[in-house]
Image 1 (cartoon, rainbow, N blue to C red):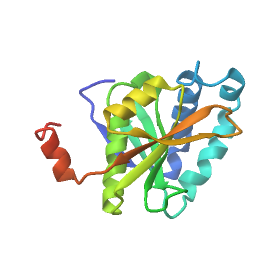
Image 2: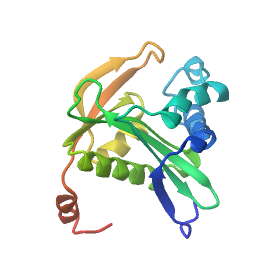
Image 3: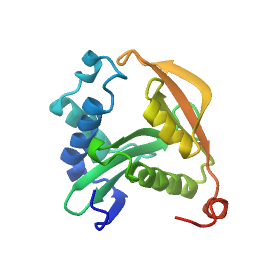
Image 4: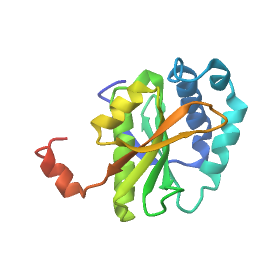
Length: 185
């Protein structure tokens, strides 16, 4: 990623469908190797991914928000979909976070989660949850560095057949976040 070109996070639009689908598919095919069985990784193709994301981008549920991170000259680098936790409506939920494998580790996911935090704070949400595959050590480490921790929730969704862990994060207000790290960005 070119550090000279700014990465912006903005609300996704319906015309982001091709770019969001491309990021999702690249992550699915690259990041989940060794985590999910090959037949599960192969369950999504371009048409299936577009069908998955089309309703989310064109007519999202009232409580859902989708943000993308993009960079001039590179386009969309990542996507996050957030809303209410389906099991705990008072909590926010990260339904999905995908960062293109070529830009993972460069701060794109952190920027997208910061946008989610801002939205949750605006909506007066004090806790958020997400699900992650239990075998995804890289994602577990990433989330732990940002204050997400397992809360004891576990599931296995039939279409994936692999254990997932629920992670939870308590959201502090922005002022306490700034004080905790000396205001460093």
